Image (cartoon, rainbow, N blue to C red; front, side, top):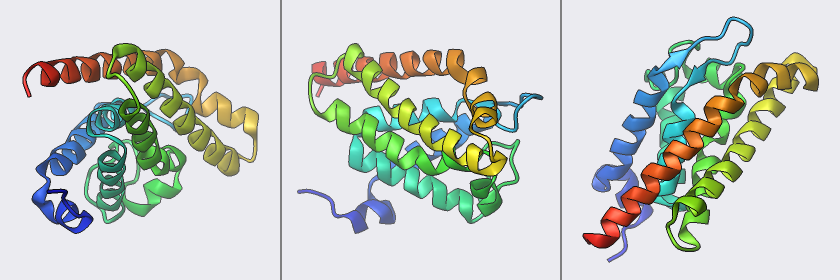
Length: 183
């Protein structure tokens, strides 16, 4: 029997709770960079892994819940920020607000074919494009300069994001391989 959205959000789907906690824990692994207001965190890795493993709808729900938790002041966002709604309106707001869509896109792509490393890597890469488009767009609004937004929100992160995408893809593909072999 399929679970309704009310059942899922009321706690009957414990995977959502654990996934939200996982992203919050990833957010705590933060490296502030002195030359940009955007810190380097494992948050994006958590978002990708949630989307790749839980799928589009559940991934979106987890990250929407995560944003609500952060907006009401729960310490789920990276500790380098101000927390709460202020963090959603600050330099990292564009990235944060994209998280449900990033997870949904990664999950949607994984749902459309064989659960391979290559599919997961492509899903992660395309989801990261959405993430950085949103983050850089928001930074451009705040700085009133697209060039400055790209300097603040992209260049310093490319190498780390490649590692996060590939790691999330490898874990997701392994998870699917294991669960297919042992239903």
